[in-house]
Length: 436
Image 1 (cartoon, rainbow, N blue to C red):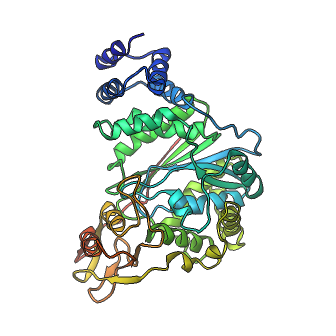
Image 2 (cartoon, helix red, strand yellow; image 1 turned 180 degrees about the horizontal axis):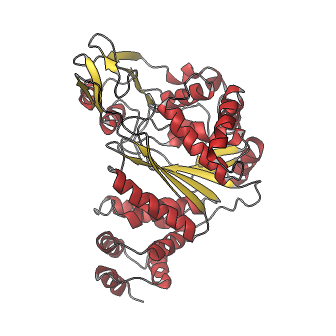
Image 3 (cartoon, helix red, strand yellow; image 1 turned 135 degrees about the vertical axis):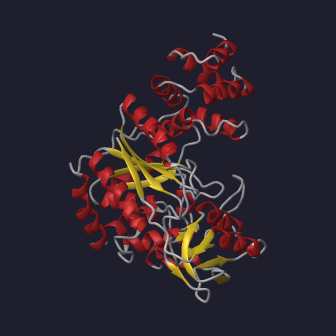
């Protein structure tokens, strides 16, 4: 085969065979397909698309481009949850221990945050001592003991995706449903999951800005799961506003702990989305037949303290200092906590989640580049949500600050992110769709 011929074939809208896709992916990994050739092929995919069968073959080829994780020696159905990225999205830290407390097995490999979105690994590392780079044997042993473990992805896992992701980022091919869906699902499948629940965000703080875009991506990923033998559910959730009240790694860890302590009401948006994800994970685990039957179990796991215990035990097994779970305010010790007031009184009529994430990034809560250092204690704590009444003499948020270099610009971004209106805005849906 010739890579130039395959580029031309996709450019002209024809369908690849499985062998042709394997040739392209293997060539990328071993260097016989040059980066510029791969970029040309991905641009052709971006313009011409791929069939459901092609996407499944692409995903499978990416899975087998490096190491795969075998979790078959662990008990039960191994479940994983993935979010496409958002602001104040602390669900993994709530969902994973709750599912484990209800009898599920959560063996998850996760990623770091980049730009305005937060990463689960960064949140875990806000607890001093936590080592997210656990050897596979240690990872499995923690899962056996606690029912849950979340670690970083192996460096040799899905190398094709790492190369493709880097090329997509600089070549204008990021927003391609076949390339996005195969990227996400190949990592989940290579990580050894038996069943996967996907939280597909939509809104101004999400990658897929409209519900229709999110549905296309969700349907494609569910189809991949079906074609490769992984039970998969996709839940489309709103990201036109931060999900939780905390934006920043230590702040989000503290908020997750507060949920598991029972200090956050069950009708809170973070709890509602977390319960929706968790109940489908428990159904895929075979623990309940009807997802609604899981709700009393999840509430009981909070009220008994078992969910919090699972999180504490996991963090301690990963080297973390459990005192930071027992006293979560220790996670957010900063030089200054600064109130931020709205420009006028009224109602919060719009929250630009992406701008809030950018504001938090500017004071050190996120990274613009992979090499940037994160300060785990800093960030933004919202005191008001979309639709809430606000007064110009009452703070709508607090900024947790250490380095004040970009502080004033960050405050401007935060104020720009929140629109105050004279009337109560229309209610926004929290969950748009569930696709199986």
